[in-house]
Amino acid sequence: MTTPSLRDFAPQIDPVKGKTVLITGGTGSFGRKMVQTLLRDFDPKKIIILSRDELKQYEMRGELEEMFPADKLSRLRFFLGDVRDRNRLELAFRSVDIVIHAAALKQVPAAEYNPSECIATNISGAENVVAACLSNRVQRVVALSTDKACSPINLYGATKLASDKIFVAANNLSGDIGTRFCVVRYGNVVGSRGSVVPFFKRLLAQGAKELPITDDRMTRFWISLDQGVAFVLSCLELSQGGEIFVPKIPATLVTDLATAMAPKVKQTVVGIRPGEKLHEMMISADDSRSTFELDDRYVIEPEFAEYTRKSFAKVRGIKKVPEGFFYASDNNPERLDADGIKAMMKVYLE
Ligand SMILES: NC(=O)c1ccc[n+]([C@@H]2O[C@H](COP(=O)([O-])OP(=O)(O)OC[C@H]3O[C@@H](n4cnc5c(N)ncnc54)[C@H](OP(=O)(O)O)[C@@H]3O)[C@@H](O)[C@H]2O)c1
Image 1: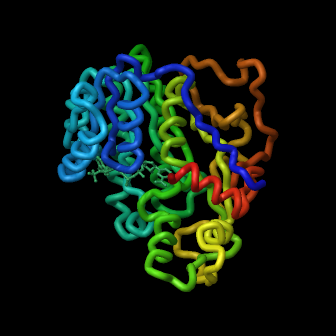
Image 2: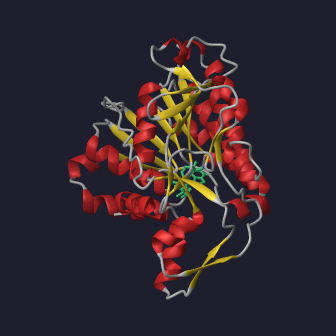
């Protein structure tokens, strides 16, 4: 395949119209793009950005002041807070309708070296978000997950899996409050901090004569930030509670990525790094029993749902995937070659 299927995942309606939306980790790559998108294309009543570092908030405010007029900016609130601090979340979530939970520690080596820190943010933080959503009667919650949470081999992935379980199970706690929680799981964001695309770009700008490849069999999923944001918004619209939504996105060999970026530069295999998988997975064969396929996404439905929800099994035209199905970066039918990657990067990064 040479051209990527560039699904935009756009929601059919404005899922935030007139609503107060709070984004944990709102100053991160995802959060910044989400806030820009909401201000530009949607009509929320208020957007609250919750994160710890005042400098990132100050810089983000400055960035937005250059992009948007004052009437749009008047909808924004910057709230300092840590997801580890439940009392602070209780205050922040007052009168909030929708929570998008993006705050996380996500560097694999840092998580291995500082396990208790990663657990405190990604797992205890998830529990605190759930508790504050319930006590404040938040209507809808989407938590961001990662392909590393599927059959995890590193602590980052394991904490995100625990977080996914906490959000899925939270629907059982909501009773008459009616809060609906779901999870969005996707792969590498092209161009995100610390990822391979900016790393190769930096090396090439420095005049590198070769690019390091960890393993020439390695494959990865790719999604753009715009797609990630649209996907989250469309899942807000679709969720009945308890789903893990997985977008259909292309995958590539890392060697093809390097070839697309620098066809004439030599590639040197340097060996897989600790905590890395050869291929990433988003849906395991064991998940297949509860996975449904839509046109542009898969949905893993909750297996322990003690609340009322309409299963996708009841929606005409939507089918379960075959038993044993799994969705991994090496069995993805949407595998891009170097030309396809060039096309993808043009659309995703320019
Ligand atoms: N980037 C990817 O390739 C990728 C792929 C799949 C899934 N994801 C998931 O997408 C989400 C967002 O990722 P991202 O790329 O936007 O990450 P990011 O750029 O590293 O941003 C993380 C955000 O979380 C905040 N944060 C960290 N610890 C916090 C805490 N204890 N309390 C409150 N805020 C905290 C950070 O701000 P402060 O430091 O100021 O608090 C920052 O705003 C994460 O859940 C990640 O697991 C990312």
